[in-house]
Length: 163
Length: 266
Image (cartoon, rainbow over all chains, first blue to last red; front, side, top):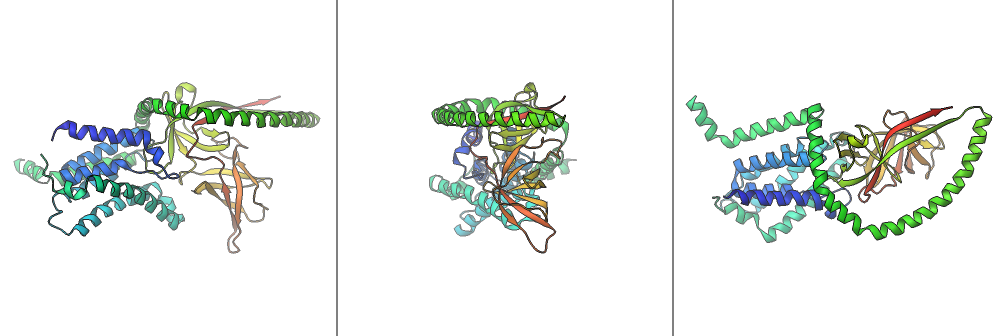
């Protein structure tokens, strides 16, 4: 795989997330496009590339954003890269429902870790508000991921042999 | 040694995963490290630079609406100033009679919001003013409606502002006219909750909420919001007061940072 095929999509997503994601926000909730690209990249390229891209891209986001917890993005995206990397080449081996459920759970798990660190106190004080934050952010990003499924299905990415 | 190398190559995925997770935890646990602050200060400079053209275009797009709004606001303010000048004269007269006069002014720096962060939740923003504009860490940030946050990281020409919408944000406030104090935290959708309010004070819907002045960061009397509900549980020793925050956190583009408080004692 050429380095430009990796570099440009990630830079494109970074610019979109940095400059235009605010236009898609509902209240204070915004879509997480880096999560989507890392999920696609890991499913296509496997665990090693997934972890590496997740960590580096997370670090870039922590540096370029105004994150309150520096290092949180690199932590969550690394975990996403590792778990979703396991889905490489397995679409034909497991049931499609199991495959789809797996990447949906990855999204929920990513936001669970994010919310556990970001809203740790809220979990103790107000459980329902914590759950609404977790599900709100997860479902909003998931809705974009589902739209992407119609353009580039994840199952096809899973069966593509990486060069 | 060769065996160890082969093991690493064989389990490189897991090895890389453990290494990167360890590094991430190291970064998370060293958030307060001053060197980290310097690094983040430099990086937000770059973000501010990249974001500025888009911010400029956005601001041009809303220029006409803004001008119309400012004209109306200007007229309203002119009327208010007139009435306030009369009140000030009356106040000065009363203070002179008490042989005490204290005037407190705030020195503010205007700034523009250049980026609203990359996190999936809006918790902080980047503004285009930093150390060169005398801005330091932990200074209050306002809009014309009231307090919206405080600076948490400062670069040369840009700063990160933690917003009031961050659930980890706390603000010591006073409810007027009762004078009751409490701790404010953001709840959701433009609403906040004040806890630790004494049970015996009378609080009504519509009462004004301002900063208490107990904090080292916020001067007293900065507007925060207005009371929208009071929860008076029999079993509790304290009241819980819900408030509506006037600032629309998602839409403002210009803010003010209070850089210093000047006290003049005559």
